[in-house]
Amino acid sequence: MSLDPSFVGRTYPPTAPYQVGREKIREFATAIGAAEPAHHDPAAARALGHPDVVAPPTFPVLVTMAASRQIIEDPDLGVDYSRVVHGDQRFAYTRPVVAGDELVCANTIEDVSTRGGHGFLTTRTEVTTPAGEPVVTVWSKIVVRGES
Amino acid sequence: MELPTKTFRVTRADLVRYAGASGDFNPIHWSDRIATTVGLPGVIAHGMFTMALVGRAVAEWAGAADAVVDYGVRFTRPVVVPDDDEGTEIEVTAAVREVTDIGLTRIDITATCRGEKVLSQARATIRTPG
Image (tube, rainbow over the protein chains, first blue to last red):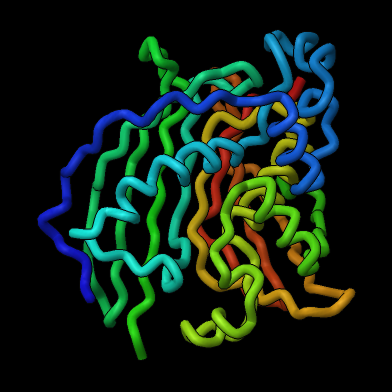
């Protein structure tokens, strides 16, 4: 089933706030072997000028991937998640994510295409505080592998 | 300027740990049966796990956990992780492309696995160390 190109430009309602926990940042940093004290020790993070432990650069994908379910699971778009592989990913930071942040995601579908039997879906997610302060903009392209 | 090469070993245990920490439970990252059913050569690492390891290398080169201001990659080839104790290795090299007059350093990154490039157009912008 190919992806529907009429979805390009579609925006989705902002997601409920994601509460960034200190232990989640520590768990994520440990899983990727990031030993920098600022990921684990609030005092080390404060010494860098942050209120609490700092997330590694790819941490926001936890928040944006959960938010992207509103797209992936949109029955009209027809994405088979077991056939999904990741194409591109980019993070453009206004500031790092820190423990205690509440993050809201606003998704937009930037591009939909089909080539060689595979579907390609590019999304942009504006990640902000509930008050609208920008934190990071995240672009993601997924490939839905065709049946071969 | 070339930055020192970094090598990361990746095993199935690392993928399980990353799945739990990230919440990405796509079965292509833990089930050979499902991975091969959808045409992959076997269980593959989460692209985001590879990106996270490379991000770690970038932050370590920068010398600060909060140095990365922009970071993007294209996943060109899957990192196949065999179900054994050795797993596989990802090698990361990088070169400084530009140091701007507002204190930012742009880096071009290459990540390979078994001699083949697994990321392309991998670029990061960091706050210039020091």
